[in-house]
Length: 191
Image (cartoon, rainbow, N blue to C red):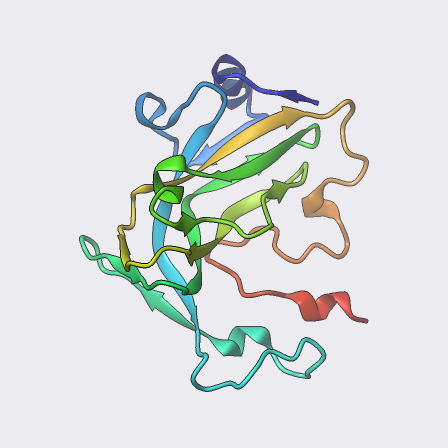
């Protein structure tokens, strides 16, 4: 698999194989082989004081374990040490059926203990939607995160051939078209 360079990312944006909305500021967001996405103002926080555990076999909606928080313009979201919250990108990403994307954390944030994804960094060919970020604070100090700040980067790779069933056409896809951070839909896996 070949990782796209900055030149190829621009070419793919121009041809529509990669679509990003709103259109990114390439002078600020384009790296040598990646493009930065920004943090939205919507977060989902676990209501850990209301629920003793998460039972993945239980008959309830995992979204009920979380509370939605919307941060006003100019305000910060403070993530405490040890906290885990869901957030989303401002930008919506759509990729063609012969491209895959990888979400990567930013080194500047990792150096102060902020992770932006636990394991879900792969975006299948045919993905469309915002990225849900799995934010964690591994550090010892609270960190203030501001909506609009560059939070993660995407890299892109060309597949050897187009995917036969792109993600958005997959019968069991759980997250295509999402516009806010989505709670786990793990329960849909158990039929």
